[in-house]
Image (cartoon, rainbow, N blue to C red; front, side, top):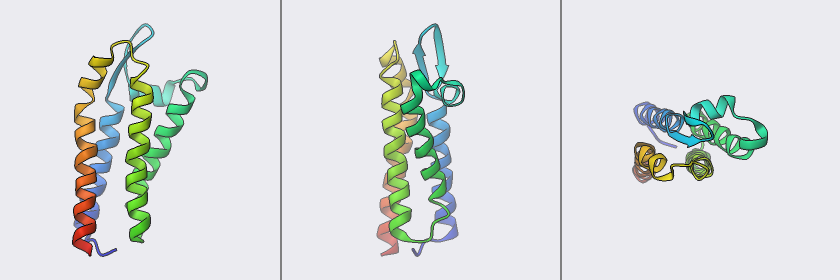
Length: 128
């Protein structure tokens, strides 16, 4: 894939911003409000196992796509990582007791995901 180091660095920065935005989303469940990032590290497997597993796989794919050299694998990792994080986001946020609050707090994350997909499209079209 003919992408410059600058484009790869920009893509990695966007991927890190998505992961950070994902971890900062607030959910209201149980006895209070907390960040998804806390849920990823402190959540129990019985209650949150599937969304946590999907989220960690999405984070892995998003951050590892900067290391792959082949275009098809780079695109697959980026798109799959975003789709998996969006799926985990929805599975977690859908359990929130204040759904509108959680969705409104997720707008920066959703915007970053859309921008990353647009950036990937631009990268692929420029590379030919």
